[in-house]
Image 1 (tube, helix red, strand yellow):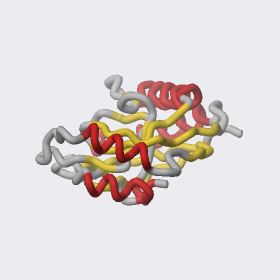
Image 2 (tube, rainbow, N blue to C red):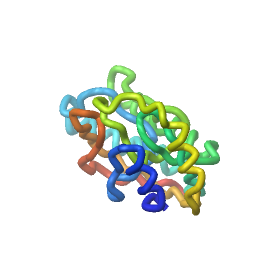
Image 3 (cartoon, one colour):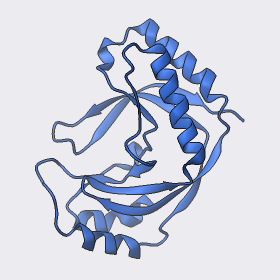
Amino acid sequence: MAESYRPVIDLAADKPVPHEWLHATVASVECDAAGIADDVRDKLVDRLREHASRVPAFKLTVGPALAATGGVLLDTFPGTHFDALVATCVDAVNAVVEGGVGRPCGGPGHVSLSYRADTVGVDPRRGAIQNRLRDVRPGRTEITVTGVELVRVIQSEDASSYTWEHVARIPLGA
């Protein structure tokens, strides 16, 4: 489905997210990961496993695509189970990592298909891009969320891409 939006993303002059980096951010740890000691990270993994196991796997509709100022994203619905997973992960982070640094994902659940570099600026044609996104079919799909990945995120200098180092897979409950 992500590939079906590519011609519109190219038209928008956004930087597409490579398929292997597509993700829905659940929560973030808003501090320098290098400052988290190994024993704290291990405790965080244990706490996330304990708490996430209480959240059952759930279905999530991904799409349709929306043209936001910072890129093109796939909306997710319904938020009920996703929001519960977000709260669970933020609580686990704040219980283990000092400083109240656990933060929920930015806005409603979403999967970013592209990002706009800071240097590109605001595009007055975003409304026209949105109209073209509406024409793409299939516009949505259903997935089953069975777990979360704890990763260390690296953002490009121009904020146009993210990569990460894998830390642990945290399965949801049955």
